[in-house]
Length: 285
Image 1 (tube, rainbow, N blue to C red):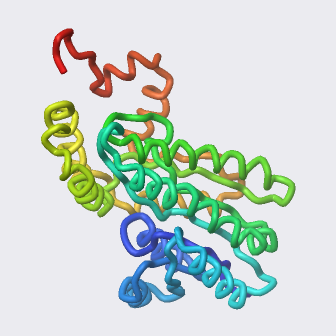
Image 2 (tube, helix red, strand yellow):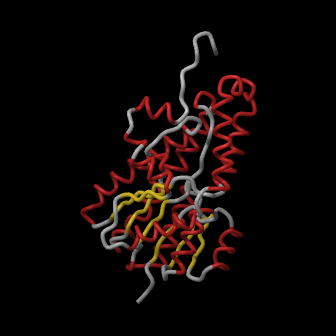
């Protein structure tokens, strides 16, 4: 009997890499979407059963090539799972986010996920496979300085639930994984992206949003060092792929569970105050 096959996007680092390695160790054949050949080579060296594919989820050509390669490899067996994990985070006040950066955030975190899903759905039908979308607690609770990221994750939550409803006739589950703060490179890349975006207007941003910006920078710094390990999310993804009756969503991490059960249910203005929003006094900018 052949090993079940799964595609994991964004497998170069963080949650995607941990998931690819764990699933390979548990007997899956893992097609791992990576951006660079060297990332694929290091995955292969770490675990057998991994087949790296160059896959930028914003590239129509690379998505088509990946789907073709997977189809040739799995044949009538189909695809047992798709883990849509690729993602980026843009952090800045919405007032100053360049529209091109906002579009790119949505292209990677939403449009790219749908594009990959569309490309491999025929293979998922063959195996009655599962779609696992890595969203975020930020897809349930929006906080200042993370508007583009929150918007993308709220959208991916909606995509997940719509797919579950639309694909139910074929026995295809669509499941949301909602991590809290995870120690991954996304925080350092997000900080670098923010520096680049805000450099031309940094004085104005600092004058208007200095307090909030510093708080966001502290949060990103703390997350990179004190967030839970990506392997903890990978274990939950494996559960979502293999459970006889999977949940429709899984929150991962204490902060995510508090957010989902408490913060998300609070009145909006109460939640705003807890998340640091406050009115400026009259006469201030």
